Length: 317
Picture 1 (cartoon, rainbow, N blue to C red):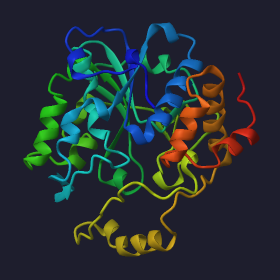
Picture 2 (cartoon, helix red, strand yellow; picture 1 turned 120 degrees about the horizontal axis):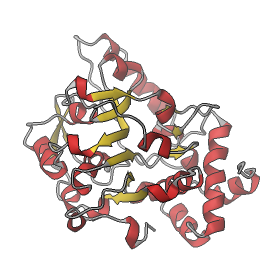
Picture 3 (cartoon, rainbow, N blue to C red; picture 1 turned 180 degrees about the vertical axis):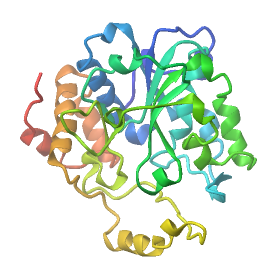
Picture 4 (tube, rainbow, N blue to C red; picture 1 turned 90 degrees about the horizontal axis):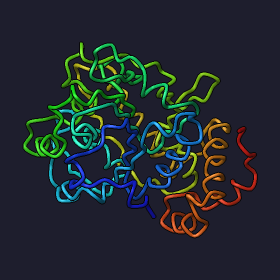
């Protein structure tokens, strides 16, 4: 299951790319359904859908990600093994849109577990005040570490000519670049970063002001409740210089005790929002029943998806 030819981008399409503003949703096969539902939400909730493109970046189209399977790379100062089949193996593709756009124009890049509740054109067309990137900070301990949330970024592609995704990815395995610093945008000068309002990347919160709902907590993904966990938990080491890591062994033990399955999302509204969008995708043919059953068979979607759809009220127009 995946996007049609007009929605996929591969390396041969970089040259001569159009400069019409574009929203990029990066994903892999495990989260393709989320990407399709996310694309639908962007279109349904925009009054200016003809003014921008939406493209899906699929890891299957970028062999340089697959070729590194099992190789060691640098993350948080430690050497880890790269897993192409990890739930979030698509994250390096966050840095590909400027190159695809020919380093021209505006782009938004977002994760496949983000769903528009407002008009994305308001973001694409905003005044960037001379900045290269607009994004929001991470929360919790990542906020205190100065980590920015690159899961939603508004990009002025002309100001990001140093973003060379394939080359930068290779630097991880030469131990010249740290994944954590890359993904947190710590390698970017701070005066080039603009502050995005939290509602444009609303972490597990759906309220009247939410623009883009982001289901950030992997273990409570609404579409995966009850399924075996299929991601690699982040390994966080206890560091004497970082008091926030001192309780890490207790947290890891608590996760083990909770069982390795996806838990229900604590906010029923967010489950209803996703399945309301999925219902519309089924009605329009963006997703078919056969596609959904195939996703269930691969444990990419909860096995009671049709029952949840039956009890989900239609979304407001």
